[in-house]
Each structure stands twice: as C-alpha cells, then as structure tokens.
Image 1 (cartoon, one colour):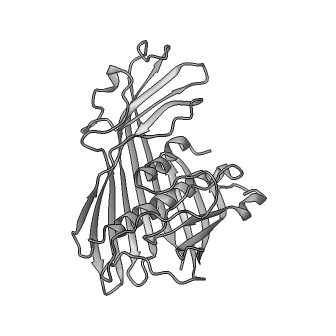
Image 2: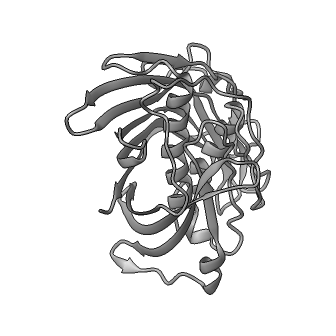
Image 3: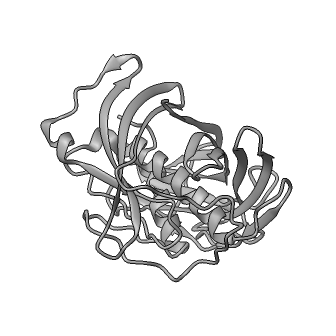
Length: 306
C-alpha cells in the first residue's frame, strides 16, 4: 500500500543507533541513559496524566496520498515515565476510505517526549496499512526528543550536531537483499516566540562525511549528488532480476512546539532520495543495463486539532 514501505522502516534501525529501542512487540520500553536537562530546557515536555491530543497526519509518497487521524491519551508507566498512548481512528488513501480491521481498536502506539523514555516500534502484523503513519509519527517524536535531550537549545540560532554515521539496514533477505542508509542529525532552534508561546525547530537528517553504508560494486561508489552516497538498496523484481540503486537521502523536519507544555503543535517532513537505478542479470551487479535516475519524495505533515 505504501510505496517504499521498507525504506520507511529504516527509521526504526536508525533509532537503534541513537540508543532507542526498536522492538517488534508491544511492551513497556526500558529507560535509556539519563539525558541532560535543566529548568531552562524550553523544549522539554511537561505532561499531565489524562491529557488528550488529537492529530491529523497527511502524507504524499511519489504521488500517492494518505490521510490518517489519531487520538492520544497521556499515561504514566510503572517506572514513572510519561508517555502518549495513540489509537489510530481513520485512514484514507488517494481520497478513498480504508476500513481499519477490528484489531485496530486494540493497536496502541506508545510514544513520548519525556527525556527518560525509550520508544519502541509496535507490531504491525494485524494492521499493515498503518505502517507509514505510525513510523512517520515516530520520526517527529524521536526528532523532538533528541533535540530536547541536548539541553542546550534555548535561543534562536542555537545549534547541535549529533553524529551517528553507522549503517542502518532494512534488508529482509527475501525481497530486499541489501538495503542501508547512513545519517547524522543537524538540529537548529530557528524561532522562539514568547508572546505566542511557540518555538520552531529544524532537524535535518544529513549524509555523514563518511557514510557507513556497504558498497557491493564499484559503479555504486560514484557520487550521485553533491555528497558521498548514503543510501543503497538491492532487490529482486518480478522477473527474478536484480534491481540495484544508490544515492543520497536527506530529511528536513520542521516542528512547532508549544512552549507552555512542550507538545507538538504541527510538524512537516520533506524526505527526498536521489538515486540512480540499474537492472542486473547477475547477483554480483556486474551485468547491468544503463543507469536511470530515480527521484523519491515523501512529504508528511502533522497537525494538532484544537
């Protein structure tokens, strides 16, 4: 249903690099190492048990559109950490309603902006149609939590750079034979409007100076764009041939934060991947047709309903 769904799921592997917990079962996450905090951390979330939030998410993925609605209730786990328990309540694809199965009412997504909370990827087994919205929502929460954990972003122009650099794999060994990306985080507090109690944050997911991806063949080493290649994938098509692609991936994530309590007011994500793609007859990717450019673009927006 979602094109390049497997690529979207790389976000989960990226969270592993950040010390968060990517899991395939729904359970209470373990606490990560304590994060720096202070009374002046304007991005830190201040939760109230029982608080409810309603969001609408809209996404465009290579021309295909979805819209999803979700409701969150703030809770506190046995370890004392606050979290938001999301229930997804509606989904449309290209303007057509997608009925959610009965199991969706028992599918809960737990996310949190609390600095001591480690987020988990839930089990999509019974609700595969929600994989895109769920992981896109987690991207926004992970990015804001990461920014707040820096403890140094309090004034317009304040900046932090978080190096990750390692390879994140989404290969499943069946459809995707090889698939990796490599990203660092460039975080800037762009605006602080104390009169309206709103801060604006930009989190850029950028190629590292030396990306950690595996390059299985020499032709994939040549730069596709203006940075070293930080994204690659090899999969089999329906004719049994090998489709290999390599290129540059980035994310620009803008988040509006309510300074009164730290909740997300709105957020947008622009996720382009510029690649070249070749179809090969051999597993060594040596006997291939001419390279063809392929531009992937995902655009997501999240809005709090008041």
